[in-house]
Image (cartoon, rainbow, N blue to C red; front, side, top):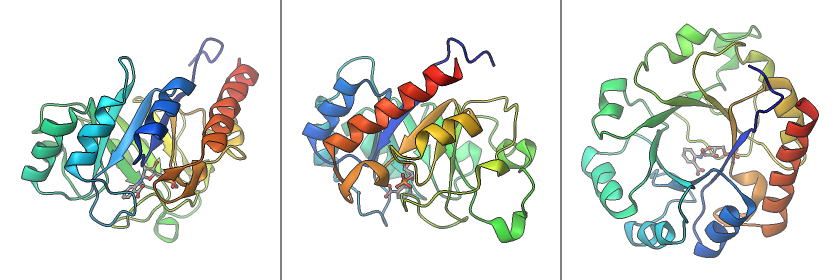
Length: 222
Ligand SMILES: O=C(O)c1ccccc1N[C@@H]1O[C@H](COP(=O)(O)O)[C@@H](O)[C@H]1O
């Protein structure tokens, strides 16, 4: 891909306060993620989701994140939060993910290093089971574990020349995202812990610094 005119997309995930959502949008992020996974410390209620949705202006996507949730729960969130995209972190098969009629991102666990070894992973093995996915999120956790850990993984294991959009996640921060973009050239980056004061509570200065670091990395890449 020609990186000269390329802009790395930014998703801030795990927001729980309308003020954080407003600031993220003012800073120019492309998407905000709302977490509905049972085991998450950033999990929000349906009522909070509706409130946060109202804080999002046009042209910014809302992503609803689930992990092996019941169908009825996903349907209820869709009704209340009107997400633009769904993000699935569990063992949901492609047909299950597609049933909601919205584009979806599939999170791919990259933390099973003992099993995978040091070689770059194979795109067909990672993405093949999800022909309907609009894109993928490579995260640092092992299969079956929740994300949002603040841990990174070995970016040299990311296959090159990917045929579908890839968001890089896991342990990114204002300090590390520039190197991540230079090495992995992702379609987008996704961050939660690295811009937080504590789980679910974002830090305005770190949000600003993260966006700045991405813009600087894009300028260098061009
Ligand atoms: O954020 C969570 O609590 C979460 C729970 C369950 C599955 C995924 C979760 N978060 C996702 O993980 C990435 C990376 O997080 P971090 O930057 O390492 O903290 C986050 O952006 C979410 O997409």
